[in-house]
Length: 179
Ligand SMILES: [Zn+2]
Image (cartoon, rainbow, N blue to C red):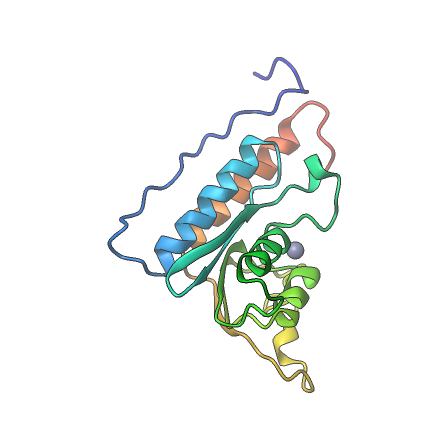
């Protein structure tokens, strides 16, 4: 039983150790998943993102909204900024973004604005997802950039279980805000 509501409950999930030999979508999503584990360990909603160009990870981040007290500090936003900084260009054109949950309106918009080539997300979000879940910014008729999309199916079960367990734990915590 939790002794102190101020102490985050430990994350019951372990990081993944994917084979380095097969660098497929599941491999890179595993790295995003590990970012999400890091988020939980800091009492943040467990969402992680990595950005890959030419098989190389150029950015990795997780949600830090609580610690940064910044509503824009979503995993994807932080990763996009890292990637742009790495490339020295706001255009992140050859990039694939791997993220454990479907991007919200802000992050979906940022992905279009930064012209990423492809987005692969694990868990669709019918409430706030803007790349197919609730709506799809990719379908705006006059937008001249569209992202290739892999919508769900890559580590989807694992990433969903992580999110659901986190929110369940929060609801059980003595003074947790209702989520
Ligand atoms: Zn977002």
